[in-house]
Image 1 (cartoon, one colour):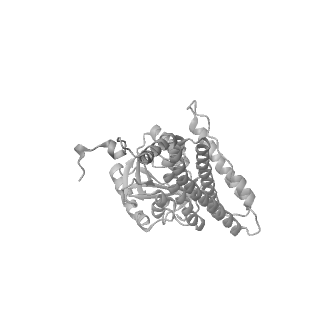
Image 2 (image 1 turned 120 degrees about the horizontal axis):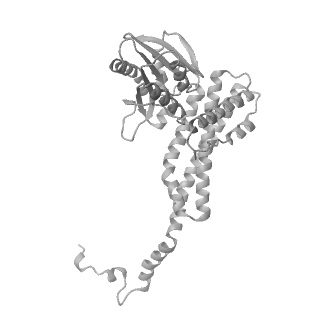
Length: 373
């Protein structure tokens, strides 16, 4: 047993009168090395871990590009889309100047929609006879491949810059963010087969729930790639809106609201969407809330909030919690089984917050790949 009260530090380190020079070197040399070269050693160790992560990102990027090329060749076997795909993946989007925030939302909306329109034209130039269903698939695959290429470029740039400058503090943020980046990249790579096959993904639970409520109703286009069905529930009028499936699209629900509000007064808005769960939370759990439940760049949410505020319309939301991987990969049975529960929650919310004779707008938000109406 060690006697801590009579512990002799000089004897422990070999610093006594009869100290062994070899023992002194064994203790002192590593201390000197770590004092002067500790950061560089840590940089090398961390660089090795990050290099493995970059290799995984490269595999995800190459896989997405190969899957996109293969899908285009399946649609048009005599085509060679490699060059055009390469050019498109290097395209970038410059967001508008936000020094003066007045009118910034309209500028962002214009920029984003211009890119979307260009993407559609780009695809049609490669395959003029492509169907709207296949167009949606290819557009989604292009966005996945483009996102993975950008992730790889940014991470590789930060890594090479830190290594070039031997700058350990510069590489620390990359080390902290890399696990999250890899999680998103792996999820996007695993999402490719579902989108390519036109199957539902977790994010489509909102359109799926509303699509089931549309069964037996007459559907009509209300805005770009967005459909409307009119029905009734407990002497209340229901306007059901979702993206036009089964194509891979999220539609434009804000434009749909803008068109509908001009025709008839709306007393309440209910939005159904998928939402990322926190660590420790169970997947496929349903939660209620207030406000516009919709992701993206924020322009759609702004437009909905602007109309709701101007008309004093309450906005309610129902979300189905899921992980990032579950949201963009093939929909699990647990999430799909929640569609009927969501419908029951919508009906309860309508009864609690509206009166007979009033009108409710219910919007299913999310990618409607593989989800008809």
